[in-house]
Length: 306
Ligand SMILES: *[C@@H]1O[C@H](CO)[C@@H](O)[C@H](O)[C@H]1NC(C)=O
Ligand SMILES: *[C@@H]1O[C@H](CO)[C@@H](O)[C@H](O)[C@H]1NC(C)=O
Ligand SMILES: [Zn+2]
Image (cartoon, rainbow, N blue to C red; front, top):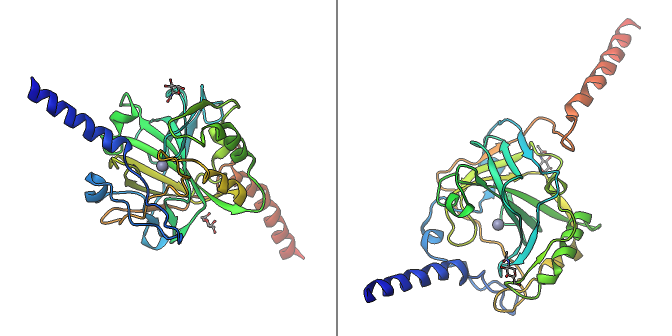
């Protein structure tokens, strides 16, 4: 009985260590980061970890059916914002919002989204200002926790942001709805405005990178089908700086919360160039080229007859 209690307690503390007591490398007074993450377990020993550099030169070409975004244009149900000590995360009751297509094997239900500053993935070695992760789990599993134990159990969409002069109105709305939890880790608040995932997707959803990897935070489960869109969204440097005022669980400003690039090893990195793209979930821009082609052939015909 006593022995079991000790084992139980040991297991409990091991799990809770993995779940909360980890941190990103600290920034030294000279601005240099202290060291690499040393998170142990599969984070250190895994061969299929994330993020990776999305190098077009290292990739193979791919072509998949289009994504189907279910209820991405409907307001999220009871969105809740939490400062989990490592990021700002917006969660909802899983169910109505899901994705399929895009070469995914089935339907994946949306659970939460969160931000990393700067970006975790790089494209051809270039880092972006911010990366948004929309996290989904395969609907064949009851929960995200369960799905995170299975290969391809989790599908994450990665959306990159670049700095520009003007603020991004959607990012502004997200910052205003979450600033109340910035100061202390572990606090949460209701997201008061309507939040539509479609508002924070790039217009071009046909050009992206795809590979199989892991969660980028401990326990780093190798369960994720990654999609990182090539087209980035704008935000202002002032908006980016506000993310850096989020406090971690030791009460310090979380200046950055991205994990270092991991080796691709023997995995396939797929680059899907897409053909044209679908705008606003409506008419394909491909259709625009039909009248244009007609006009051009007319001009060509006239040219020949003159
Ligand atoms: C939000 O905070 C309240 C206490 O302020 C707590 O009871 C509740 O469990 C928290 N919700 C989440 C999702 O963490
Ligand atoms: C991918 O993004 C880069 C940088 O924004 C852009 O120059 C390039 O044209 C994009 N590729 C495609 C196929 O859209
Ligand atoms: Zn993430």
